Amino acid sequence: VNSGNANACTGKQGLDDAIETAVYAAGLLNIEPQDVLVASTGVIGVQLPLERVLCGVKQAVSTLTPEGSGNTAMAIMTTDLVKKEIAVQIELQGRTVTIGAIAKGSGMIHPNMATMLAFITTDANIEAECLNKLLKSSVGISYNMISVDRDTSTNDMAAILANGLAANPVIDDEHSPDYKTFKAALDYVNTALAKKIARDGEGANHLVEVQVVGAADQNAARTIARSITASNLTKAAIFGHDANWGRILAAAGYSGAVFDPSRVDIYLGREKMCQNGMGLSFDEEKARKELERENVTIIVDLKSGDGQATAWGCDLSYDYVKINADYRT
Image (cartoon, rainbow, N blue to C red):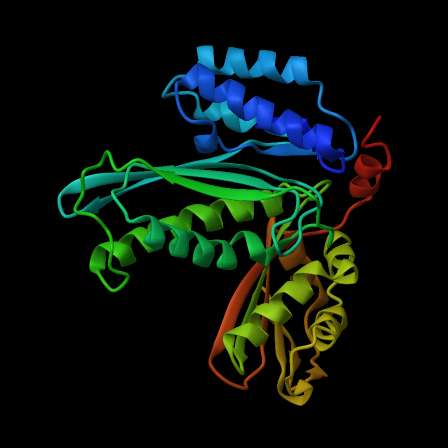
């Protein structure tokens, strides 16, 4: 992992440099180059300082340790303020299986992942096809349901590696109890990291959780939840502790999902502010207190079906502009 240089928009030299780093790392680790994953994050359009990168690879290999996860999570940070890591253990037919993960991301975060990296490892014995399906599904409800600034990037990755050392009976059936248990654990890990990324959004003071229920289907719920989470006006209102629920309904309206606005109820935490698409007389002070919480919850009930989805984001503060006004300097 190279943190600080995106190695994107760097032409053939950039590709050749990436290949060289993989070949070099493979030689040090005594593995095949195609077994090396290369990830980069940072400034776009600048050539890699290749010699420095190769030196860093050599140092990293020489200091590998089972306890190195925390240092790795810190090393891949860019504008992040906190490192993001998690590990859980589950029991599968008498065998203890571990899932551990680290991630980075703080800005240029929007559904379809954007400029974030996530690396998940497990000792589970699981068929590759099942693992790939589980990762794709898990990313869909976690990293693809967060938004910091509605910007995406040239660089992102979510990778999972399984070595099978837990020696559990192989997971090869998506209908099996072991598959479902592993899925629940993987979803928990990725959702936790996704929320950490959203909470650590550049300049953010609040984690914002948007729950959409009662949609016609899950796709409609996902579309609306992501639209509200990405709304700059909603995010700014949360920063200012202003219970402007009209911005929430507006973001749902322009999302592209079909729903009946005359049936919509909106809650800010425990305070109901809108019923059947019309404003209610609510306690402004109680609403402000909900917005002063570190974790702010918005609930939108469309009362049109069983579809539901949750998305996460953050408020939009003055500091976001300051951080991004001089990113390269």
